[in-house]
Amino acid sequence: MVLLLSGVTALVALPMRTWLEFMDEGAVRVLVQGLLLVMLVIQVFSMWEQRHLRALCDHLAEQMEKATEQRARADQLYGLSILDPLTGLYNRRFGERRLDEEVTRAATTGNPLLLVSLDFDRFKAINDQHGHAAGDTVLQEFSRRLRRAIRASDVPIRVGGDEFLLILPDCPTDQLQTVLSRLAAFDLELAGGTVHVSYSQGVAKYQVGDTAKEMIARADGHLYAEKAKRSAPSGTDVQHS
Image (cartoon, rainbow, N blue to C red; front, side, top):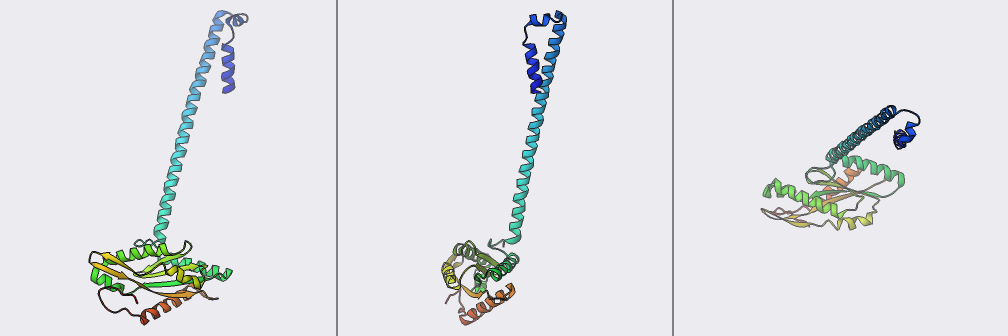
């Protein structure tokens, strides 16, 4: 189309004397009008092509926008499927699957792997005396502090109620207290008064041949032994010894 337009322009630019040497004036007029018509057709076609190309670009942009929205929706649904809605920590199903993966990796590489079981001290007293909404607030605040205390590679999990698991990949036993020291007991102001929040813990270190279920059972066993050893006294607030 560019070549044709260039050729038509060159022919129209020739002097009238040159045209009259080959044909009469009427024929020249008809030829010039035909050339002008060709140029008009070329221009119309070019405008149509531009509109068609613009429509195509708009269609592609629309499809890309829809694909981005679908990806964001898929990411949101995936997040809902692996996260606990109250605390924002990973849920039990995802946590158990992740622990299976970390056990397999530890068995292959020989790197250390720790599993910590966490449970609030006398959480039922908070719900009974301050209400379940207060209990939810305590869970959310503890979860926020837990995320801040751990490393980026660690996996915090809410098993259910006030029970939590913490997967610590590539974490030697002597570094565990460094992590947990950042998760101290705390006081939380609620509408019904001040609540003292503390927790008990049980730790399981990966041993050759361990399964995820065995590590969970061992960590829970140590947790229950600690809770039995230091049962908190009854009272309004949860006590931490």
